[in-house]
Every structure is written in structure tokens, then in C-alpha cells.
Image 1 (cartoon, rainbow, N blue to C red):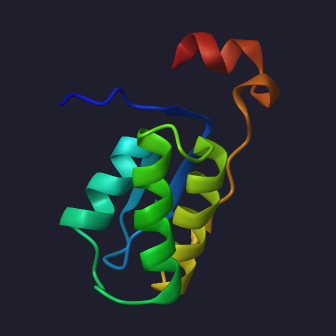
Image 2 (cartoon, rainbow, N blue to C red):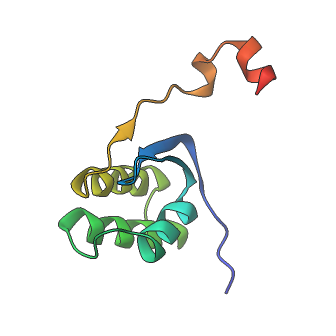
Length: 98
């Protein structure tokens, strides 16, 4: 069964344990990372994030709730969230250049 992805209104930029920053733009990207690349396979927020991301993909939970759980799991695993402005706050000239 092919489940459509759910994009987040504001992507989440995370600094991985290796120091690289990675941007997650949707529920599917988050659950794929949690299931296949996650550095720790335990933690209260890790478990919640997996469950809420799966629920969101099945339309049983809001995507925003899955995003918040994923952010909390990242913090729990020692991966800080980088501040990110919504696109509406980025000057128009910068949006066109990107």
C-alpha cells in the first residue's frame, strides 16, 4: 500500500551527531530517518515519534504533532534543532535567489 506523504508547513533543520545539518520537510522523511538512520534505538521520545509519525501517515494523528514528537526525539538523542524562519519571513529577494 502506498501512503501519501505529509509535508510540514515549516521544515525542521537538525544538527546530526556528526555535525552535519539535515533538513526534514515531511512526516515520511522523519519516520524513514527514525527507522533507518537513528543513532539510538531507545528513548521515550523516540518511541513516541515513531508511533506519531506512523499514525500521521495513516491520518490518525496531525502532522504537526508528529513534527513536535520528532523534534523532541532529536533533542533526546543529543541532536539540536537549528532555528528556522518560516518562508513568509524570508525576504522576497532571497526566496527568488534560492
